[in-house]
View 1 (cartoon, chains in turn purple, yellow):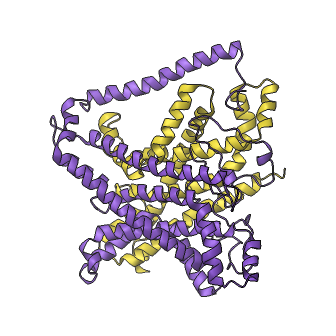
View 2 (cartoon, chains in turn purple, blue):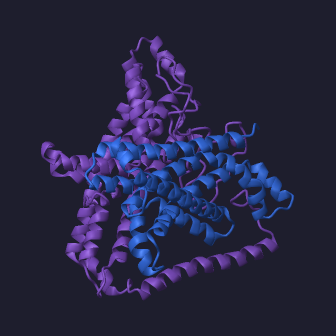
View 3 (cartoon, rainbow over the protein chains, first blue to last red):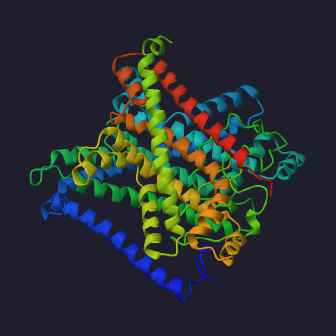
Length: 356
Length: 215
């Protein structure tokens, strides 16, 4: 059996055809690479002088500072968004109607508005009340970026956590109430720990998004990695030109390395959680869905009766729906039975991107 | 209220710009994404490699960086003389295509094994299997993630506004530079985006219901 369901173990004819396609395919891919290198060469990007700038201590310090300020924003926004996410998730599931309505409105508004719009609006507000804001006023772009990221990602994390909480079997909640636990105890001792455990891969994937979104600081002129690199490239002249391409390649490599490291952590936790026999299923290491949930029928407080795990409002699909595997480009044929049910994976409101 | 009424033409243009940019780059992303998903499941190793590299590259790069590449690298190195709209289209389309590719690929993987086996056993080739058997069935599972991807695309298109393409974020920037109260501008721009994202999710729900088949 070959690696994919889509094609058979090749016979003699197919093997010849595959070889032909392999040659043509490699030639095309190689051609693309060669063309890119040729063009880079023609434009003088591959000259040794251009790359020599990275030996300069000032350039290195610039890039290091850029990475550090990106990580600073990421760390602060990541932690704050997890805290805000927890608060919002609990608030949305609250029995008190005003609290849950307020949280729902907040989540739906800021999740639907592009992050850049929020960040920019915050920046303008901070700039106009600069003198009254103390710490925030001294570094408006930084705080606009951090608070914008926190608000947006907090809302997404809240939805992820809520999905995790809703996935806890209602029998457990009933058992807890039968034992005489209070509402707060049920939430803090039973629901949240299980939700966090099962949703950890998705939450880390959202943190990857947070990390990528720190680059929006470029637009509000906060000196994170991208902005630092861009201004630096503008100030250097090698062979009569700004080495923007070289700098962009280096910065891109740094971003990709950071994101890959973080998302492989998510995949690792997902794999490890999958082996465990206890607890509710671990979610996929995929970015959570974007669909607005206002129209969902499954709203409502999580009292003694928890929403059923397959409630249509669950924004993140359960774990067994992740389709991709870590096996590089190989397709990952799954059990036929699994996807035979009427509930196609990623059912209503529960889409799910397979993680590489 | 006044900001909206006094600047209705700007808001309208921005709204239309966002819608057009989303539609066009969504189309580009769909085409690229499906083709590359095909690469990723194909029996040809170099193409599989290409697909994997593509997805890894574009999923892990911040969109802002892609915009920088589209603005300052692509015109110099590859194709000079692109207008901003095309550059934004390319950046958004390429970025989103990686996500579309992953969605389509996981959709392909959810089609029951027996279907592809049956297709093969009656003598269909790889392309026939994919085109006639697997992709039509994968469509159903791919629709919910696609809706999510298009909503994300709508929101991502705001970055184009920062790079001087006419759309809703550009309107926000323009009007706040003119000194109008940011709260109202924010509200109206947010409502503009809400209209688009709700329309997308509504359309996809409709599509889902129409294509849903009781099995």
